Length: 146
Image (cartoon, one colour):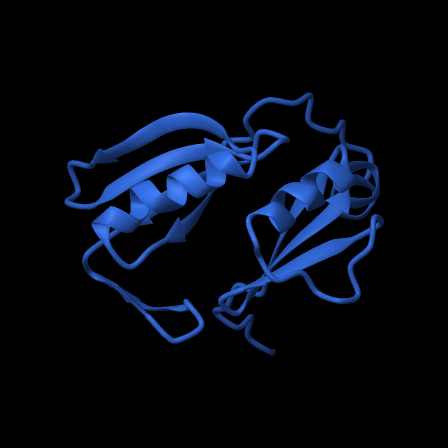
């Protein structure tokens, strides 16, 4: 029997308004794949794809026969770790300028790092964080965390 590799390749966000969500991530300056369009879009982020796919289409594939989410927070957060404590504040400000909604201002956390939370135009929560123990490669992929 083949093993399931320990890797995360793609995170797909179900989009109610793919065009608006796509525009938000483009305003962040993130590199969009050339094959993206208003039916599917993806951004290469440190070795992982962030994909955007229309909610009805994703529901038909991933949750056939299940009612779609009504909106609001899904209980999932995505994180973008930065290289320094000061970069949390700068990245937070850049996200807000690009159209993110403030969820929690940058603050020092009990676990020793610093983080803030924003929401994209569809309410997906992003943590912008610095953890002094995190080590990244040149693409921003996590090599170790602790």
